[in-house]
Image 1: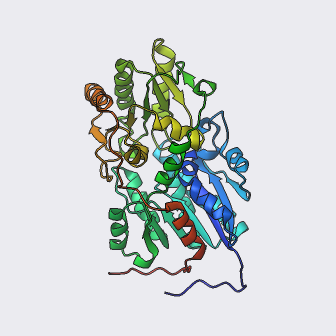
Image 2: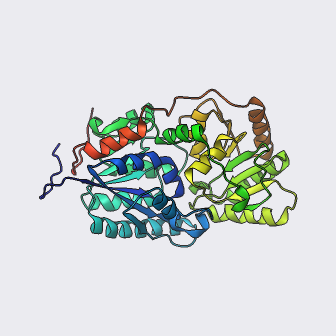
Length: 396
């Protein structure tokens, strides 16, 4: 495999790290901190997708403001999201994202582009980089799930040159997909690095300064909901959301409910949340946007149970031992710990599972996604591994 060579001798490797949501900073914070410290790296941060949309940003801080406060420079805004949440809008947004990322990469000329996960905005960045002969590094490839995101994740894997799986099953899966095994790593999940650090230090915030709905008393026990649409089930999402809302309301526990991501169907969920908040006067739910990483992790750490279909319930909660009620098909095939109980979109099933999980309490910490020096190992590899452009299918 030929190494990528420049016509000029470079002392610094220019790395562009793409973040298309607040959660990307929450989960990759320590990686970019490690890259920032390196004297052989020129780090660029590309902010796009929901990270730039006002309705998905906390009143406490924008992502750019957080990054600047943490000492980061070379921050680039990449705006391309169309209004609406239909499948047609998402397909068009993916195309526009490819155009806008191509403009950025043409300007800054990175040696490698780093992406994470399975979002359609991330696919845009990977596609643009690939056609511009820029090597792509992908974090969290090889996972399985139960939605369109899985197809997107595997497509990004096949566009990528360097792979950072978060568990051993995923690493082996990437190799079976024909990727060069010398470029496939399992250092663990960087999410776990972040929660390990924050769980030791903690962080306090008054949630009544942001969000809407019921008053939140931090001294009282609470549930946490993170619920997103499934692309193939958009015709069912309104009724599914109402079932979940009824279940949480009838449990009569203080609850923090985070707004959905921007996938097709998110507006249907958002509509149901607004109607509920306006029409039900005695509820105990505080509705929230994204929060800065340290504040979000502290809130998650102290929750009695996480309910919904977020990968945070699968990964971060496995290490923290937080009880999880996973609803529906979105995380169907993920590698799960004993802390996860999966139920259908049925009010009584959800109530029963939450009651059982709260009664059970904390689980033992799981090492499914745990690694040693995960973020530092990823940063070191990004900075030093030989780069290449032309990919081949490897039959191992």
